[in-house]
Every structure is written in C-alpha cells, then in structure tokens.
Amino acid sequence: MSVAMGGDETGGFVGDVGTAVSKFGFGGEDAPKGVLSSRLGCVFDQNQAYVKGSNGVPLLRELTAEDYAVPDDYPARLHTRSPFVAPPQNQQCVAKWLHGDVSSLGAARFDKGESCVVRSPLVDGELDDWDTIEELWREAFERAKTTGEEQPVLAATPSDATPKHRAQYLELLFETFGCRAAYLARNATLAAFAAGRASGLVVDCGAGTTSVVPVVDGYVLMKGIRTSKRGGDHVDAHAHDLLTKLCGGTEPVPRAAVRREGRKTYESWPEAFRKFTQRETVRDLKESYGVIPKKWGLAVGLKEDKRQFFLPDGTVVDVTTDLVRAPEQLFEGVEEEEVPVKKEEEPSIKVVRDARVGQRALQPPQIMPPVNDPVVAALPEMVKGSLERVDVDVRKDLLLNIVLSGGGSCAPGTAERLHSDVALSLCAPFKAKIVAPAAFERKFGVWIGGSILSSLGSFQQMWLSKKEYDDDGPTRLVEGRWG
Ligand SMILES: Nc1ncnc2c1ncn2[C@@H]1O[C@H](COP(=O)(O)OP(=O)(O)OP(=O)(O)O)[C@@H](O)[C@H]1O
Ligand SMILES: [Mg+2]
Image (cartoon, protein in one colour):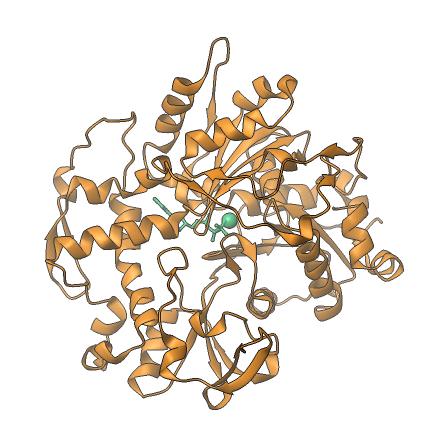
C-alpha cells in the first residue's frame, strides 16, 4: 500500500519500546524527540489489582504487604512488578499512570501511606505488559500531538518476538490506536540500517537483555539469534552489590528518599520499590565511570577525577576498580543460561529468512535448532554461537560487520574488547571488524534505523493498510508476511 499524507510521502511515527527507555518520534528525523522512561508508576483503584490466583487465573483483590515482597529471582527481574506476576490485563482498574521520575513520584505516594507499582513493558526481553506498552504509545502520541489515525506507525519489536506478540502489536496499533497503516520491524534489522548496513551481526546491549542477531539483506536469521539476560540491569545489580560492600554493608540511601521528607519513611517502603530506587544510584555511577578493559585480564586505572563518587545523601565513596569495570559483566558469563521454551515458536519447522520489509519469505523452510537451546551469556561466546548457527557463506560478511547497538554498549572500551575477544576465538583466515557508531547513535540505533526505513520512498508501499489488516487478520499476517 502506498501511503501519502497531503500529497507528500511521510516517514510516519516511529517507536522503539525498550525495557528501560522508549524512543519515539517522526520518521525522517535524526533523533527521537520523545525519549521516555519505560518504567511507569501505576496506581490502582483502592489499591486493588489483578494478581495471579492459585490456578493462574488473574484475580482482582486488594493488595497486601505480601504482594510487595521481592520475588526470588529478583536480581534478574530488577523492577517491582512483584504483585503482577500476571499483569493486570484490564486498564479499567488502573486509576492513574505516573509518568516522569517514577522514583520520586512513587516515593511521594509511599510517604503518604499510599501505594504504587513500577511496571515495565518487557520482561527478560519479551513484550510482556501490554497495558504499559499501550500507555507508553498513548503518552508518546500525546506529546507529539499526533495520533495513529493521522499517519502510519512503525513499531520496532524485539528481534526474536514471537508471532503471537507481533500479532498483539498489530492489534494494539490498528484496534486500540485506530492506525490507518502500520509496520513492524525487528530491532536488529533497524540497528543494522542505522549503521548503514543491510547485513551485519548486530550486538544489542539493552537494559533487559543482550542479543546477538545475524541480519542478511535486511532479514533476521532467526536460527542465529542468541540472547542473554545479562543486560544493563544485570550490570546495575552487580554494581549495587559492590557498592553496598564498599559502604560497609549499608545500602546507599536513594535520591528519591534524600530529596524528600520521605527519608523518614524510606525504611518502610516496600522492599522491591526500595531496591528499584537504589539501583538508580549505581546506574549513574556505571554510566559515568564504567569502563571495559580493552583486553581480557588487563587492569584498569582510575582517572584522577573519577576516584570518588558522591552518593545522593552526600556521602563520598572511594571508587574501586571492581566497581568501574562492572560493565565487563557482559563479557564474563561462563554459566549457561536456559532460555525458556517459547510455546508460540512451535512448530520447530520455520521459515528462516522472514523478517524484512514486508516481503514474503523467500527461502524454503529449514529446521530450527531446539528453541530451548542453552545460551552462553558471555558476549564473545554468543557471537561465536550465533555464527555457528548460520550458513558458512555468510559468516565472513557478518564478522566484518559486527554492529554495536544499545545503551549498554556505550561503556568505553566495549568495541575494543569485543574485537579482542572475538579475534581470540576465531581461527584463521577469519577476521572481525566492529562497527561502533557514536554513543548517541548506539543508544538510539533501533529508532534511527526505523526513522531511515520509514522515510525511504521505496518503503512507502510496504506499509500494511487497515484494509489488509481487516482482510487477513493479525494472526495470518504474522504467519505469512512477518512470521
Ligand atoms: N555509558 C554507558 N555505559 C554503560 N551502560 C550504559 C551507558 N549509557 C546507558 N547505559 C545503559 O544502557 C541501558 C539502556 O539501553 P537501551 O535504551 O538500549 O535499552 P532498552 O532498549 O531500554 O532495553 P532492551 O533493548 O533490553 O529492551 C541501561 O541499562 C543503561 O544504564
Ligand atoms: Mg532496546
């Protein structure tokens, strides 16, 4: 379908909803104008919410202190959605969404004896909380003073998003937001485009996950995707432990408690919320002090001006080398992590080249590796694992185009270390080249790729129209066109 608005071709409205940061803006522009925190505070009517009932069926009831307990797997799930193991699928019980600085806004509520829950759109790299996804898009449209009816909308999805989730995304765009035309593109394809490449091995270090995704001619090779839960949140959790040790076992008082009267009531905040706010301090530290040694085993020196760090309450800590090299966690996973079986991905026979610009799958079906294949969390191993799963004839090209993307790849030294570690694990005659765009472009790479793609003249016929959506239905569309 060709989409024209007022006679001009349009880049539409582009959105990349991430675990921590959501990026929105008009296609054709250089940078996303709407950069929102993905973690939203949510207030429920009379402190009620849908929680997981004993048989797994969501159950509406009043929240109790127990609901705010920290889940057993807390370090991996760093946000406070503990009461929402089954996220409420009903916007009606949401009284209010809190946008902006969720720590301060939430703190204000807890200080008054009220409650609030921090929700995140993705969990472990999967689109998970559709209410939050919807609210982020709603806020983005409002801020940009536009709607889905006024122009086509391009949404970036995780590279390994399941057909079920992609169908849900189409439903959200066409049915909830009344879009006239829309398009779904996979993160890695867009990140490669942003780096000026149709093919490349995209290494996306996000907040929730790190993924290595082979892209060939704009198509994601699904069988080569490797993901690890070791994203920026994992680094924050590690740095938090180190900082707490450095403070003699006392967890640092978060900014949200210092700025407010709330310091008095901070201790009584639900544990999960306290942890959420504490992580902000180490995140600041990580982003401004963090480095990755350029080679394995290399020591890092502390710069003169980066030997001390001021905690929000004014306490000064002497920074240690362990702390500044916290981002090195991405390179250090040696344990194998089981990836849960995604039921929607069955059957295991699947079209491999399937992910680009609306063209129908070109390749005959190939056997997919088992979906619960263990994934090694260390980045160089993931690169190797990914290459091993793709055809030999594309490996060389991918190795020469390893594209860094995502905020987590911005720690100084990342590109050099990746090059050094990948080179170590390669046999001659292979050579690797890391494409490391500027930090700004890495942070917004997926969005920038979407902006470029959606404004290409040749792309305008790729938009999916409402009529096509109505005729085919979301399930058939994702099975065929965007499986
Ligand atoms: N200079 C930096 N050094 C290290 N990490 C950084 C730096 N700048 C940002 N980050 C981290 O990058 C992460 C956010 O990156 P990004 O916006 O790519 O993630 P996301 O898209 O929200 O998450 P995901 O892609 O996993 O869904 C955060 O964990 C943030 O702390
Ligand atoms: Mg992302």
